[in-house]
Length: 137
Image (cartoon, helix red, strand yellow):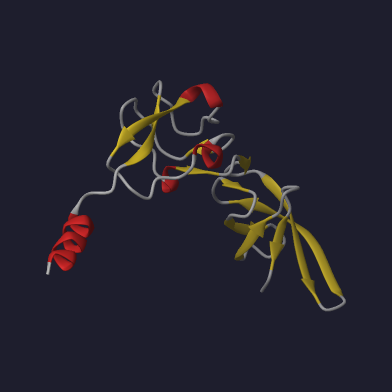
C-alpha cells in the first residue's frame, strides 16, 4: 500500500529544471550572443537548451529575470519588409524565376507572403538559406 502512495507523491511534485534568463534587456530583432544568457535554477519545464538560443534573433523584448521560451526567438532575419526578392517556382522540369516584394520580415525556413511584381498576385513561399523564395504553388 505504501508504494502507490509514494508514486503518487512523486508524480505530484513539481519538476525543477534550469531556466534560461537574459543577463540584460534584449530588444526585439537583436541577435542573441553567449554573454546575453544565464542558466538559473527554476521550476519552469519545457524551456529550450542554451545552445538552441545562441545566434537566434529575439522576436520580442526579453527582460532580465524572465525565462526565455522557444517561441520568443527565431532564425536571424534574411529578408526585410518591402525588400525585392527573387521568386523561384520549381515543378518537375519547369523552373520559373521572377521578382517579388516581401510583405513581412523573415529568416531562413520561414514562410513569407510576397507580391509578384509582374502579376501583382500575393503568393506564399519558403525562404531559402540564400534568401530566395521557393514557391510551391
